[in-house]
Image (cartoon, rainbow, N blue to C red; front, top):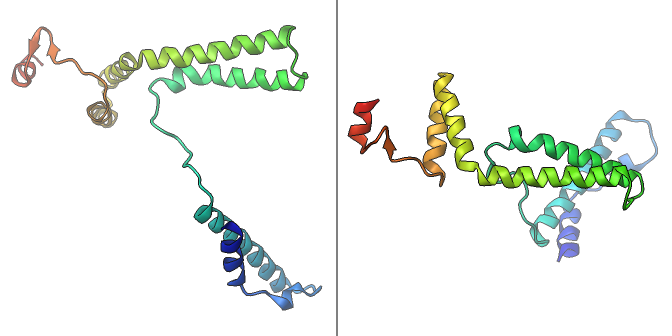
Length: 167
C-alpha cells in the first residue's frame, strides 16, 4: 500500500528536466531543492496514510518532575552513555555507578508518583504565599480538572459558605 501511495504521489510531481542538466543557473538549484522537498513530503504523506503509527510527545505532566526527577534522569543518561562507551562492562566502577544512578532515577519516579497529591498541594500553597495571582488561578483550574483529592474541610469547618466565612 505504501509503494502504491508513494508512486501516485511522486507521479503528481512535475520533473524539472531543465534543472537536471549540468548547469550553473542559480534558479535551477532552487528548483532542485524544491523537487527534493516535494519527494520527501510525498514519502512522509504516503507513510502517514498507510503505515500504522502512534502519536508521540508529552503526555500528562508529572507534578514535581523538574524539581525531583530531572536531575536523576540526566545523571542516569550520562552514566549509561559512559557505560556503553566503556564496552558494557559487568563490573568495575562505571558499571556500578551506572546501576546506582539508574536505580536512583527510578526511585525518584516512584517517589514523585506516590507523593503526587502532596506535591500539587505544596505547589498550590507556594502560589498563594508568593501572591502570584495568575499562577494561582491556573493552579486552581489544574486542581479542579485533575483527579487530585482536595480537602473538603478547612480549620474544622466544611461546606462552601462556612469555609468562605472562615477565610
